[in-house]
Length: 259
Image 1 (cartoon, rainbow, N blue to C red):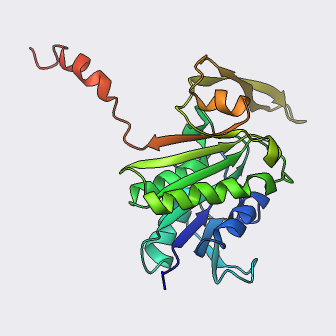
Image 2: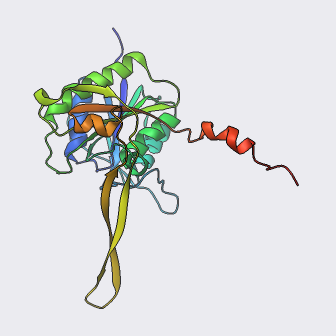
Image 3: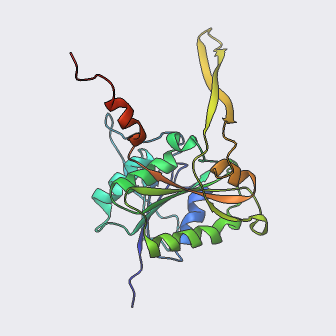
């Protein structure tokens, strides 16, 4: 009998978020599930790790079908590190992160705690996928995307991923029948035009809220933003080698070693 794959599940919205509970329900159909996720929301923490304060881990019982489920006081990356080094007896066959409440397409991948958890798994040599739904509502409907989550997960388990590559998967907010399909895309060139909203406390002290507008600067039809806007699921292969290989020849032409 073929052994079930061991799947690590984490996220950045917190262990009780509907998105991770939906993801767990799909993963239970595929393999043996271990959950290690933040005990509170950790959105936009990027690849932060906890080094100047203590970490607390609590075994919890949310789903009676999951024997190994822990909440962690740290970041999503802390959760993956702790799972690999302290909880799991062997390296998992897959790590899935999400489902995030909100988009992690385009430049958002840089800030995302969801994707950073997947990237950390990739650094550990674990095939990893980050899943996100373009709906920030806490009560978002994840049912329409479950079949596609399962399909993508099974493909990764069957085929593996290229070395150093993680998948960033984003779902449009649509009914299942209205999703046109899955597109492998590149990350769109986009950015946040940000500003700080300055206010004052009743005691006269200034404080600020970061706000801004997302701007897509890319007209290409092969990007994640185009796919999502046109009703497709976007799948972007992401790498954690940040070397700009195309720039090395240019830099080597500089007179860096000349007196």
